[in-house]
Image (cartoon, rainbow, N blue to C red; front, side, top):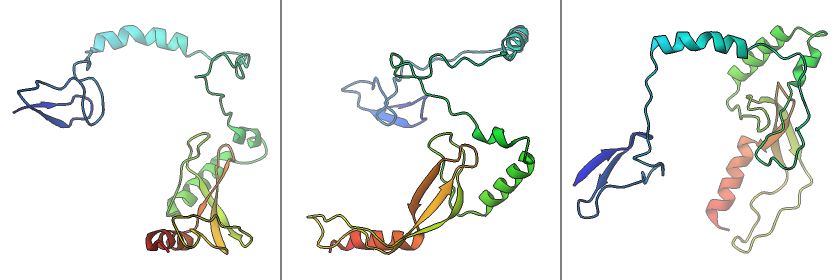
Length: 180
């Protein structure tokens, strides 16, 4: 038995001598022979530095021509930081410090699906009117009213996201694990 270590995920791959070596890693599905290494020296970095400075010059005007172009399906519409509009009226450094303090005290901090910032727990929303879905697999419902939702707000783009509160997660898991 021969062994190979995947250069991508560093998993040891044991292959049978009868069948020969694997062409792709069974764990990460990357091509085992396609791994390439480049060597960059200090001299190479110094040569590239002036070009990088030239490319980093800010543009005077941001072009929004192709934001909604349907031909380019892989493009993503950028989300502008809507927080910057409050910069003249409010102390955004204090805002960032307060956000960091709140996030440090939270037990959970999900990521914003829009801009990938961590979400701030704004509070709980009580749900009293709720029609549970009926499932043939269960005799009861997976969740019954009343229950609470944690409401999270993104401090950067103000996207709102909800998740089931901890105490109601227990009810949800209990209802599904009992099969009743």
